Amino acid sequence: MIAGNVPDEGYPIPLIDPGRCDGCELCLRVCPTGALAMEAGVAIVIQPMACDYTGLCERVCPRGAIQLPYEILVVTPENRSKVGGKIDKSR
Ligand code: SF4
Image (cartoon, rainbow, N blue to C red):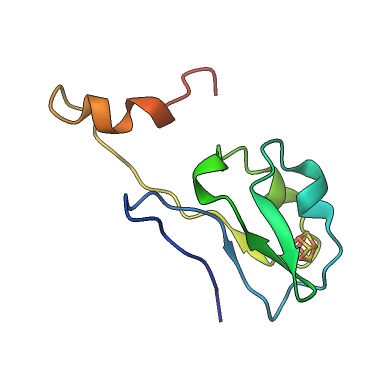
């Protein structure tokens, strides 16, 4: 079962499968924002809004336990203020 939580704003966050996670902590080490932590021997997303979608956790996980769900958003003048804070044009 994939575990994850979606904040009220609907912003997608990494989904971590506790059945696959072996607690190696590699994802915690590469996360640049400290969004992840360990709980009961498995990784969890402790600060959902801190996630900046580098994708490093997904790439480093040797067990394929992390998935980053993506949303495709069409930015319009009307919704620009809602999504503007999460758009990084350098990637
Ligand atoms: S890298 Fe993968 S297996 Fe290791 S703690 Fe993170 S989610 Fe679990």
